[in-house]
Image 1 (cartoon, rainbow, N blue to C red):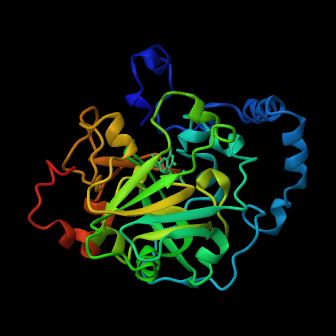
Image 2 (cartoon, rainbow, N blue to C red; image 1 turned 45 degrees about the vertical axis):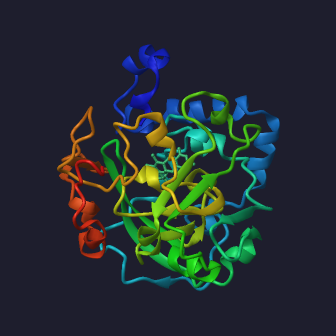
Length: 328
Ligand code: MTE
């Protein structure tokens, strides 16, 4: 995605590393760790003090609070999930930096409690909801999903969450609601990336109502059985596994039911490159690169990308009769 930066960034782009290579893969570990110290230092003594208060990693994958009563889901892939460290250190979260290894550091002090989600638009139960009461009615499931990024890499992630459909049913949309729009927090004081004019903020995404109601679509609140790390979209983010990763919007503060298609962040940035549907499709190339193959994080050889990221049996019917070259 960083490829679509404006001309002002072109010089910097020329010396960028390939987008699917981790900083830690091309950098000796000692240097990498020193850079970590540097970034910690740069964010000040307060950050170091806050880091010292974080629970030790020994208690779990990330040392974050465990989520209780998580049941397994039949929708999970049997493929092996990527390591916790990979999933939490190779992130796209532009609000916290446009390099993959930046969000893990710059989101460290991100405050996710208290947190409210505003529900508005064409829906019966409009209002401001405290995040914990918002999540509480829903049984949590582990959903191990493939995530295919539009940039050409993929990973397998054991999310914890619940079907978006369950929430939508409780909120009772009006019959005129045809789309759902999601908005990320806008707070440049916490999100340094929002001070840089790479994208228009707040980040906005959207789904057609039938996509939102599909049983594969979830709101994720956890990862590897624990609370979601900040860099992965705490406290609540969308996950739509048959679409390119940019549809899976993070750190949601607003859900709006609409009768018109929302204008979404990447489509505003480059409408000819990032469509509203963004279904994973190896037959429709991105204007500047092929989408036929992908590199799974942790693997060397590229693998073939599957139509709808391999979830066609659950979602292909949503698009019958549509020209997927026009509706990319
Ligand atoms: N949500 C917000 N608010 N900001 C972002 O920059 N990046 C998207 C998506 N959600 C993004 C976002 C992209 S491009 C991808 S691939 C996924 O988040 C990455 O999710 P992950 O970091 O948890 O793997």
